[in-house]
Length: 68
Image: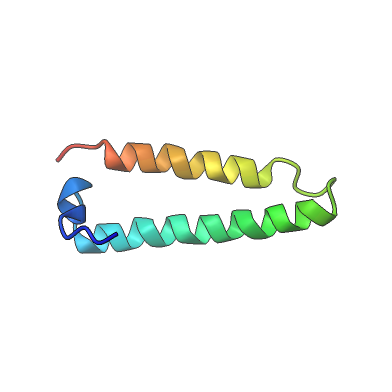
């Protein structure tokens, strides 16, 4: 659970990590609400939550595999 070397492992500064972790959190929250709406009204936002999740994974892979 606690990994004091996490920033080094992801090759990131505290501020960089704060920014993209915050972005991922907000996108995840958005995906949650869109999926919740879609649960009750299936014709609204049929692929929105899925597409947001794909974007999160794509962006995370780019960030975590970059080199300095």
